[in-house]
Amino acid sequence: MYIATLLTSPATPTLDPALVESLRNAWGGGDADWLAVDEAAAFTLDTMPDNRWDVWADLQNMGVDLVILPAEGQRKKMLLADMDSTMIQQECIDELADEAGVGDRVKDITARAMNGELDFEGALTERVGLLEGLDESVIDKVLHERITFMPGGATLLATMKANGAYAALVSGGFTAFTTKVAGELGFDENRANTLLVEGGKLNGDVQRPILGREAKIQALKEITERLGLGHDDVMAVGDGANDLGMLHLAGAGVALHAKPSVAAECDIRINFGDLTALLYIQGYNKSDFAQAL
Image (cartoon, rainbow, N blue to C red; front, side):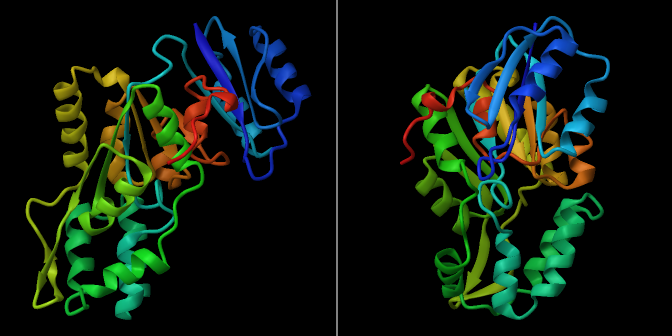
């Protein structure tokens, strides 16, 4: 048994009931369950449709995301999330680079690394090297003036945690940012790279070992083992090439507004919904959402 979920942007909720009924009838699905009026609906399916991706492509042209998942184990017991361009709307290193006057150079490297064109570790050390000499105080300035949360993130955390889930933030970014983001959103733990500082200024390097793709996979394995959970109990979410390992290993790996090369490798692709989409595809109704912290 499978569950098909159709959803669209909460900012402009225009999911057409006629569209949902048409697809449900074409696939012989069960009755539609409206999880949020005009925004998200789901129905059961006995088998995975052969034309799933053709329909997905057609729906993308209408501004609608389609996700089909097994009904069994739909609600997950752990959330493993990337930070940059996932839980927050920015890439922290790009924002620091703007303050250091090397923004364009660093943003180009970031984009290529997240698209899988560059080795993550090499790209990180090159970018951090360009920040050498930047005052450590700039980190707080960027946090307060430049960093904004991805819509739906606080609700996602509050609702999953209210239902007993564990939440971990695992980033190839920096602990100076993950500590703040994790604390404000309610993550149970966070892991990231540590920027090295000498005399109140960034020295152009990070503490070793560097946390990249393999470290995210290891985090999933370590945390699930510690909690007595299986990999299938995990919902992972990210947008970059360094997230693919954990997205593939998790029971549900979500490519959120991801680079095309990354989304192409994932069965769960959210391009129009916000982070509350991760609740809808777990079967939560909007009335089930918990109040954010």
